[in-house]
Image 1: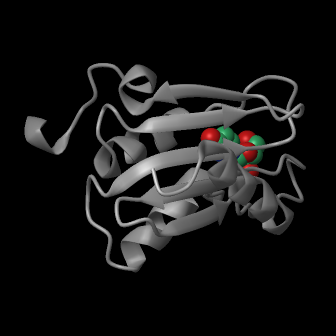
Image 2: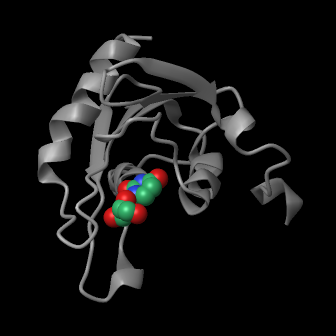
Length: 134
Ligand code: THU
């Protein structure tokens, strides 16, 4: 990896300040390390029509896709919030991660005290539904 997991997590933490979460008051930040070393960040963006909320992870992935990145182009993911327990991605975001990662792609989760828990996309989404299944 071109940067450490701590450095990637730091970027996920810094972007938290841009979270637009006036309804839940639950800010989430995400940083993606791409295969070429570039980093994309994202935050959750809420709406008065609650169901339109976009999670931080999907914001980051869609930003990378908009910049031209293709499936399986993510090297590592860091997700941050201000929680007592390790903040883990929701089911919708896990499915989107599957598209742009491999089963081995590391996912770093954190909690308020800064501890990092390392897992993988394959562990978060066993037996994933993929492009290949269509
Ligand atoms: N949220 C994320 O941004 N990522 C997740 O994986 C979990 C949930 C956001 C959505 C909403 O703005 C707030 O957290 C509370 O659900």
